[in-house]
Image 1 (cartoon, one colour):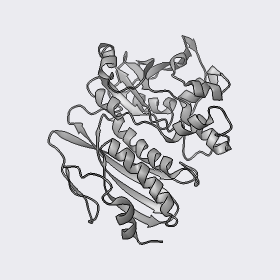
Image 2 (spheres, helix red, strand yellow):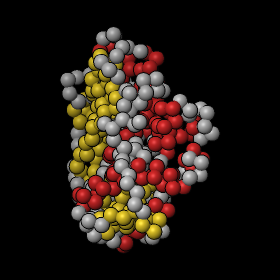
Image 3 (cartoon, rainbow, N blue to C red):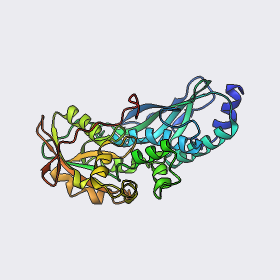
Image 4 (cartoon, rainbow, N blue to C red):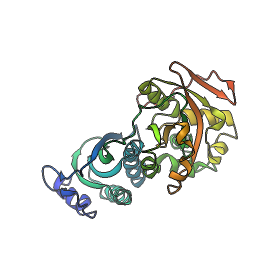
Length: 325
């Protein structure tokens, strides 16, 4: 395997313009950065492992996009502005073609969101990617999972369920056979982190989370942290025409996919009645679809319904430690 330092020099150094708040980046034992005044630093770390989060023969450019986009989504859910990241890359062997495609896609997305790679590590072993991202939030405006109040409205961005369908097609090898397969495969890997939407929600949302484990599971984190309950109208869940085509226009199944699909990286957030009217104008520059799917209820109440008709669906979210059968 080519030496660590030659890999860093060839694939990672001098790939981006230097941010003014980075005093020392890649090439030393530590990076040195400057945090602006009157902000807080938001930090998140995620790991992607070959065979768990992506197949070993997956497109390396798509793997890079997924790795960084999923971390950017964590920043988006807090309303944070991306700043810096570090990357720990474990490789079974040196594959220059794989690295070239991976790095090209990684730095393209990083530059788009003005997040600079400032350090990390490379080592030999089973293929895995660990990213730590840092972002800035105003010290008195950060979004968290706490803060939802009874009467608040529950919203989601984008459409839901596509990632689950894309994963099923990837695992079955039928993504190029099904009419919607190619598009659903892309949606599994190539999510669009809602960074601008998260920033726009800083003064409007009472709580927020990104959808990584499935809406039904992730909304529970908001309810637990905020000490409230919720009522969700499944008829309002936003599903794509591609998902419906994949499921043979079975709307009930599409709704269940929307509730359980992991790795969507859309936002779920709550907004008070008083702020509801400001959402459209506040997010008008984000080109982000919004859908109201329910309302916060008193603690202990949890209801799924279809236009008022109660549903007894027993649904679970996405779990990396539970293998699909």
